[in-house]
Amino acid sequence: MKVPARTVPDAAAAAAGFSLVEMMVVTAVLSILAGVAVPNLLGSRAVANESAVLATMRSIATAETQARLSGVVDLDHDGIGEGVGLGELCGAEDLRNGAGRLRPPGLSASLGALDANGRAHQKGYLLCLYLPDAGGVGIAASAANASSIDADLAENAWTCLAWPLQRGNTGNATFFVNQTGELLVCRTASYSGATAVPPAGAALVGVPPDVIVDAPPAVGTTGADGNVWQPAR
Image (tube, rainbow, N blue to C red):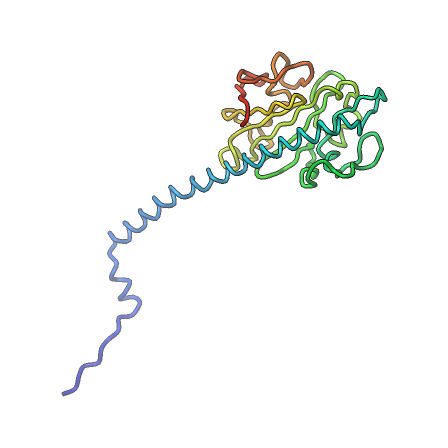
């Protein structure tokens, strides 16, 4: 007796084995998984960026203090060193006293690649170091602003701020440090990218937000920008 040949279902027949309800269930499950995984991934990246930038801010504070104590820039020739910018600290720009570039540099070269506004980009954050002009207003310490930096005031005051390139994505917290070495953080401020930039004296007390001289840090209190700043750990 002849045995009938066994038929193999084609792809179309196999696909027909999934009902519309089953496909909808699979789609819903995948959507739920994506809804959980993507925010967690973004949150983990933001936390990692904040940790990296916090370490960078500590390094900046140390390098700035060393540069001032070493007197690498002393334009008024009074024997007291003045603050320098990120580009100078990284050896990416000539020191503004005409003494060439800092060797060895005090910071990683990546921090010396400043944009047109004198800001560095690192780990999803923007960073800017400010030095005072003759009126005590903080200006980005870049080669373009070198002639506006007040030599006398720059001996005693500087600030540095770091804020997310895209708040809620690359980070949430804004960080601040100045010549006191007190590192502060604000997690409620809405600073983000080039459209919402923190003022130079944001975390100081008793001065307008853009002034950086003769003012203590806002440790556990409201700063000049109207936000509450806390010690960063």
